[in-house]
Amino acid sequence: MNNEHPISFGLIASALLVPTVVAEGQMETNSLNHFRFVPRAAFGIRARFQNVGNLVLSPVGRTTPNGNPYNYNDGYVLTDVSGKAGGQTWNWGYDSSGQISGNTILMHQTAAAGNVSSSDSTDLSNPGWGGELIYDRELGARGGMHYGFESAVNYANISLRASGSGTGDIIQTTDAYAFNSGTTPPTAPYQGTFNGPGFLIGSAPASSSSTVMAGAASITTTQKLDADLWGMRLGPYLDFPVDERVELSLSGGLALALLNTSASWTEIVNLAGSGPLSASGGGHDLGFLWGGYAGANLSWQLSKHWDAEAGAQYQYLGVYRHSFDGSAVELSLTKSIFVSLGISYSF
Image 1 (spheres, rainbow, N blue to C red):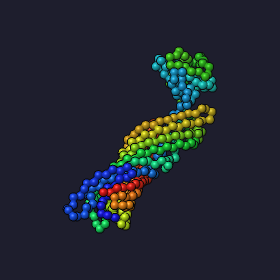
Image 2: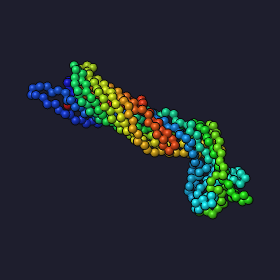
Image 3: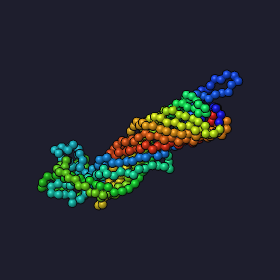
Image 4: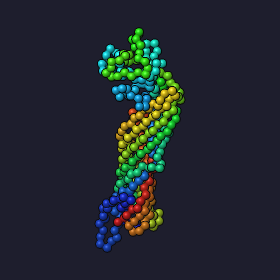
């Protein structure tokens, strides 16, 4: 292998060489500054969604005459045009006469208990893609080996999708809304309106109770996570020849990253005796991570100016956690492997 220190381009690379000034008649020596850009693929990044607290579920597609969603499985109790004057409202509705108990209307609300989580999910068939711009500063050489300091900035796009089904616990809350004794509610099913007028009931529950129904619901989940991982790293490197045409480079040190995350999720719950219920959420967040890396790069000289390169880098950036609208997202970057492969040009 010749003594030129290559400036490498990946498949989409560009490079900058700071030339070395040599006396007339002497051979050109290695550049002390080395820039290269390589495309990379990310593997081993895992995501988990987990409920935190109870998720209130709403009947899928059910709305009041004014277009508001139901806030109970079998009815609704909402503010009317008077603003709940006198602690009463006519903007309410119910499904069944069986909900009448004495001088109260019983409304039922279902929540999924916070004990359901997705399994780990990694989209191995669609790894994260990105690239890395690297600067090497050679500090010295001993025999055929070169050593120095390396810094790099990089980017990777992470896109994970998961879906699954299972069973979970359900918490059913029963709220009792009182109406004036001696009056009779409209025949079910009934839907009152915002402007009214209509039959008045209490605007707040007169009493409330909850029951846990273990394993009573079948749950279908869909989760999506997209993230931009902007990173940098710095540490020492060591290059040494394997034979005349092959060179191995080892490096390691500190790794830092800024994670721009977008997550969304949907849960559809089917409970015996009622229609499907749903809950969904999502959002964005920025997180800072830090850890370390260790890498190896192998270059094979094809000609005077062209090299084939392959590299692998392990990074440990810890675990990112954040709650998005009642569902916790956990992104594990403890076993991240970044692989680069390409053709390099040296001059």
